Image (tube, rainbow, N blue to C red):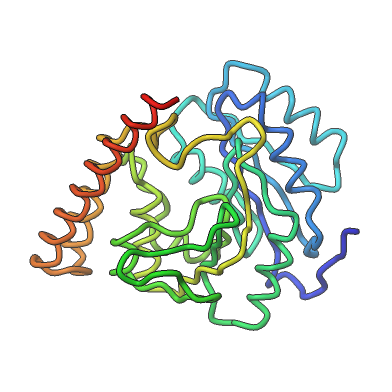
Length: 280
């Protein structure tokens, strides 16, 4: 049963879904937005159609026509990439909180409930994320994270957490750090996360807040999409490190250490991907 959260506009939520040729998955994503256990007083979903050439736009229009309670909106743009699409949606959003969702993922039915309860108990929270699977989040050298972890920038550079579709963040924080860097083709999420963690309260919960959609059963890396380009992701991480050094988030010694760390991760992923493809 859907309950209405009566905490005023401070818990208003805008769900942002960038979509490119997502006709097979977009309806499931929208269903997961609609079927939340808690709906705040203001709740909207913005789909940014990034130049789709399939039936994505028609399906979204039909869905919003049949589900007016969602306060759905569509932004159509020429294909410009996921970062530009997310920027367009978030800057157009009216909610205080931005809930991110990829068009081939689905929200956990209690994502709103879990995060709004956390916000009510932790008024300093400005960025919250969780898990994409039932597995607990681990960071190398730190081990399994506690139920609630306030993440430091240096910890993010060891492992990027959380996954995008689990995140809810304040729109004002997104705007203050300048949004996604549309010049970055790979690892743009990590670049944004690090800029936020440097200045704002960045929390990771040991809660499953989203999952892969039924048509999106893939590995976390080396499979398909942008994350499938391992070399591109490595180069994107190198760009993040250069940005962090320029902002003095890390010093030159740490920069060198993290360059080697990312090189080791890259080579490990290449080996795992080759073994996986030979097995499958």
